Length: 428
Image 1 (cartoon, one colour):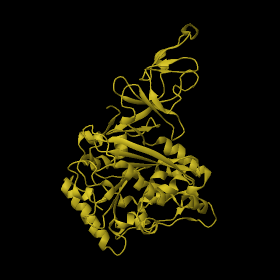
Image 2 (tube, rainbow, N blue to C red):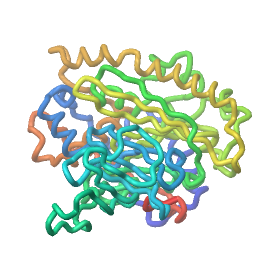
Image 3 (tube, one colour):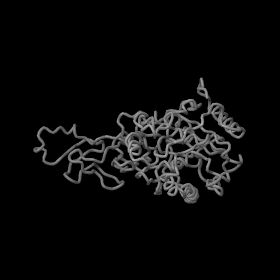
Image 4 (cartoon, rainbow, N blue to C red):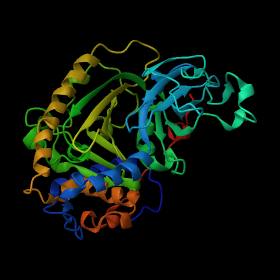
């Protein structure tokens, strides 16, 4: 897997994907030199010390999707994001900039907002009346005379990193983290033809599942399970034998699964508006991206789902599904979306039906760890990155994964993304 010496054209990229599928259909084993993947220790799913490390050193220091611009479309609109424990206030400023702050008054820590979303002219602490602008600056407080020498400029709301990719808004509690663009890596290059800056918010829903977050996330990083779990749905139109995978730096990855028939079209998307000019190899197959740590998105020219995996404790999690439609000049959303979302929910049930029982099993003495094959290498890649983000030396030795996949991390063959598709500060 050599590094390309140039940035291939779009058609060259498509040719490489076709070649990858042909190779996968014809192979009789893993590629030469691919390692036997070491067992992933069972304790990574159950050990309290490891799970605490995972939360503090990875989840709380990663770029995670928070909302779409349509959810806070005008100045004063806000959304309260609490998925990772801390209350983060995301707000659309009067200057058009979307910012994020901890929902914590600089006086004595009381909240500025108490509802999941809404619209305000300013931010006023309900406890003692300290008042902040939409840009987080402290602008007024009661009884200033009793705060001797108080400098208002030193008591702004504590900021949280907030950046945009297209119309999608991400946050990161780590002030020293790389930029969102660096975290996304090669993903914007593939997304460019899907016009992320024109997407529209359609729908979101969360589903509570009684398992560790990784139990369910693992299932969305491979298609080895299609013939068992999705016999009457996904396996009818996707051929897992031709799946081509790229492992990317930072734990990101790409999985491209061909349709069984080149002329097949998802009946749930017929008649829906589509992004014009999307390459045929993308439109007629199933590309799925992993943006580390918790965003899986199987994109299509007729709409994009963000499938998000959120920890709710050692044995519970939520899977959140958010749908986006391509931009279509302000026309009403297609009524076909209701059917499409319902169809997806049936597939999602198939994926989640065993999760609670798997959790019970991984906690039993009968579970020693994950034994993975070549098709499941995205799971191992995800775990390697987890240890790197925690710090390999900080992971207890009996719970570490061996770092064996570096030679198979691809320098993806795509041309640099257009400026409009790159990650950017959170402005409209």
